[in-house]
Image (cartoon, one colour):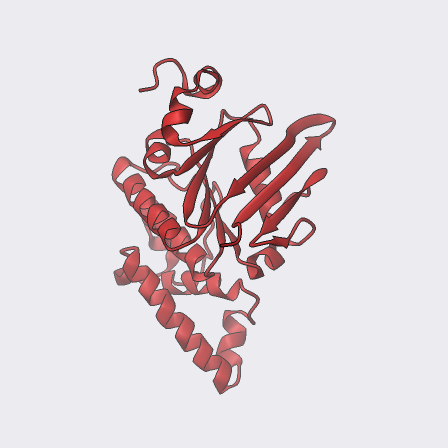
Length: 255
């Protein structure tokens, strides 16, 4: 099995201030690798570099053995890299179903309008994607809301919708940037269940999250970033017990 996501020697500075320093990390298929650390540690900058929204000063990004370091975000999506963001990202003016379908069009298709105006063969593909999107909505408990405007979804359901849209891309690698942020415990558990299911289906998942209960429950490996440097990588029990991690992030009262 090829490596999912390989980050090698990534460094980044802004205005002469080092944000990431020689960070290397492998996110393997069928596993959840969590990236944790205090605010300002460089987690979101690393996510932006992986997904192509920032360029590293040095280093390399590979997905499924393919070097994507200099590629634009849309080309990374075509290569099987999907991403969610800290802030809710939805396509307003579309239905819940159409939002999920937009994930599939991220693979480089003609887009929703193009598919509707296309020749019969392309329209057959549009019908196939619509069916697949409905199946994803069923999986995420959103089937009853398929045809309603996406703006009408409660916040927790909109977060689940983002995960469904990511899976519509049929990705090799998924970067989840705080998918449980702002969610009550019940909704956070649902997110955790779907993240686990995503990984067990063979996806390499990089999870950036401050909800430590969720991180400990779903992660196979945890990487700890502190002041732009990778402090340690290990399984949840190892990371929880590491004195350096306790001092830098988890705190003395961590159970």
